[in-house]
Structure formats: structure tokens, C-alpha cells
Image (cartoon, rainbow, N blue to C red; front, side):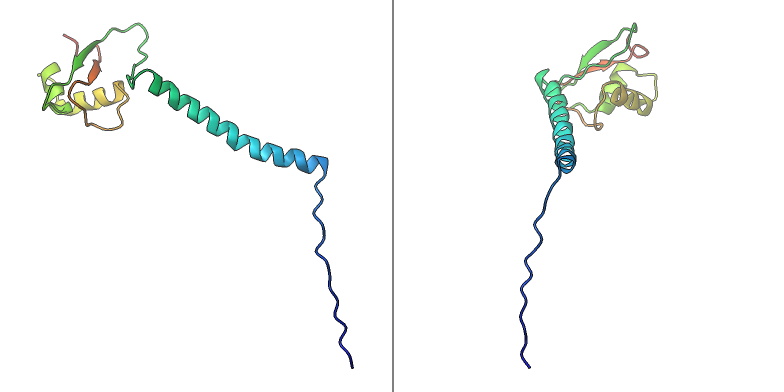
Length: 116
């Protein structure tokens, strides 16, 4: 008895024009999304990181964070009769801050309810 060895070649991959279009779209969508996300990030960096709040017709003023000040002390300074927790929450939301930490020299927009 002899053993016959057969070698089967791997089938060749063939992509149809429709398949090429699907692959192109699958590659283009993440690339476009990344480009848009990168462009939006560059817009924020171009203005020096200054955040502005769109407040319509309401007016507001700015305060500058002093050396050694926290958002809590700024809240007590701008609204001494209000609950500092509420003022801090309003400042974080109004200025679109990621957290309640601030740096000396940072300018914060103060909502009109606290502007004296």
C-alpha cells in the first residue's frame, strides 16, 4: 500500500467591486470620525483654552482666581450669603470645567445671579 500525498493549494481571495466599496467605506468612516474629533480639539486649543459660555442675552462678569484660592474660596468671595456648594456647582457648570480644581490666574465667568 502506498500513500498518495495530495497538496491542496489555498483558494485565492477575490474581491468584487462591491466588496472593494464596502472595504473602502469601512476604512473611511473611522478616518473621517478621527479627523472631525481632531479638528474639534484643535479649535479649543486655538483659543488658548479659554472657555466661553453661551448665555444668550444674560450678562455676566469675570473673576480671576488668586494665588492660593480654591473654587470654594472664590464661591465664598463672590456670593458670601449663598451656600458655597451651590455656587461651586454653578461655576463648574457655567464655565464647563472638568473638575472643581482651578489654577491661580484663571478667569472664571460668574453667572448673573452672583454678579454684584
